[in-house]
Figure 1 (tube, rainbow, N blue to C red):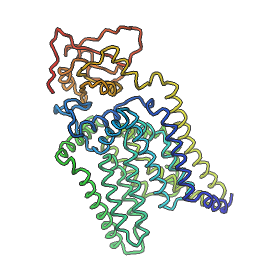
Figure 2: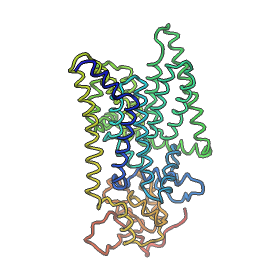
Figure 3: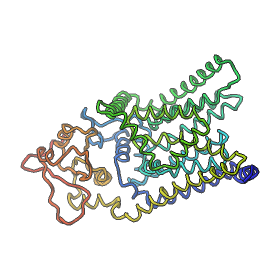
Figure 4: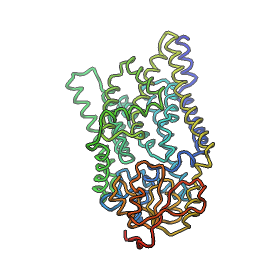
Length: 496
């Protein structure tokens, strides 16, 4: 393969055609995902907490129920209220169905993929490589569970990547301050969308540093860097302040709860070595990306990007590694792969060009097989066990319509409880004392038998006056263990 092949491919697959192909593949992803969107994953912790936060934050909400009840005897107030409120609105617009928040999360992932495509093009990456990397991002097995499960990481990353693209674009224009001001506003908005977006702040610094002129004296270069960072930071602060203006009265509680959560994840029992292994082990599901990025960084000596990646890893470790927080490291890896692929494709030798082509095919192929293929196939084959209506059927059969105030530790029971108008409580922390306090206010307890961290053990439930509910069909396979208050122990304290 000679260099004329690269030029011909770039002409055939120019930016316009690459965008059209990206749109078609994104539409295919959307349609395939919709077939199992309510099945995979089953209702889970992050999805339920985000949605219930949104319910609590809307005006006129009943705040005597919460799936995240703090040790301070009140609901938790999240810092990322725009995403939570958007999730609740999507839930209501979808007829109070889980498909609404999940579709919104999926659209966020598509937006992130599109932002990655545009951003890589502003970096001068060839259209076909930018296309392959952006689609690999959308199909990445590490990213997919979060956005299919109604998380908003896609929207946060889309906003940050668009900001990085604007910084690149502004560096080439005659009036750089306008796009950089817009980039700052996007960065501030991303912080409101999801606080984990701070993990991409080192990438912003890398972009500012990488687009600064080098033909000036060191003092002028440093001055220019500080001016641009200050300008971008000032507009980010303005945008962030405007975002929180509607909830200014609750901001102190939001900060208190967010910082308390971060402290809980990095308390005295925190083991840095285990945390590093935790963060790195999540990339086992994306081995092609992890290995390819490492090789590309070393080969092309992308030390500035590597420094940004290490800083981002430090932010992950400082706030506690978690698979859906670790995913914010992926843009760094994808950029490294795109730069390596670009260099290999521009080689005059056939070997590196073949490696670049094979690498991009392997990167996309892995995601297609795992995310579009295996994930959807598994969900379809297990559609009976994952049936989102199954919890409602089981609770109606065993407890009736209610009303009940439930100690609701089983995440899969959440949508059923809301559809029947139940009140519900669940402790945010793993505190047995908080669990006992909440149990005293409930008349039923719905427990997930597979939760190893459940603090409402049979002993705690018995002490609180609960006994197991007799099952009319002892041979049936049940999702939940259900306990009811023993009438001999007196009624529940139904005060908030």
